[in-house]
Length: 166
Image 1 (cartoon, rainbow, N blue to C red):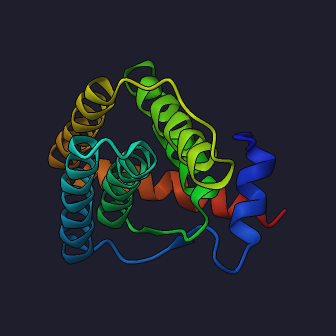
Image 2: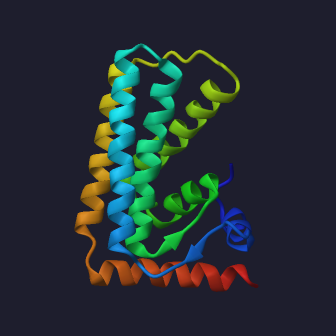
Image 3: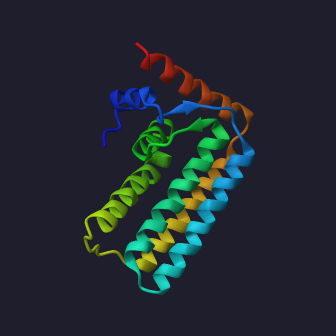
């Protein structure tokens, strides 16, 4: 997956790619609930020693938390790589760089265990702790959003949308 401007432009041209929508606290809450349910699934699978579903649930806990953030901002995107690339673009500061990297790695790990049956050398306890921390940090980011910060992110998205049509 590429995370450059060309890739984001491609994402904006896709039918299920990046779309601006009205911000929705209801959708945000629904996706946070999905994230929390994925955390529960991750724990149950880890306790049962089922690595591939622990890894998958970990990814979805993170992905749904980011999607909750996007719902709060006013973004819809049904292509996972585009969602991750946009997350990287909007939150590219040093403060959030590790979250973008973790989400990308989590997706790669999920693909490896689900589709290629690769055995990962993942410590499940560490994975669960990292995932919980990731979700907590996204929830804190959401809680820290105010009208001005949402407007600034929407402006950045509109600028991205305009430049993609050139």
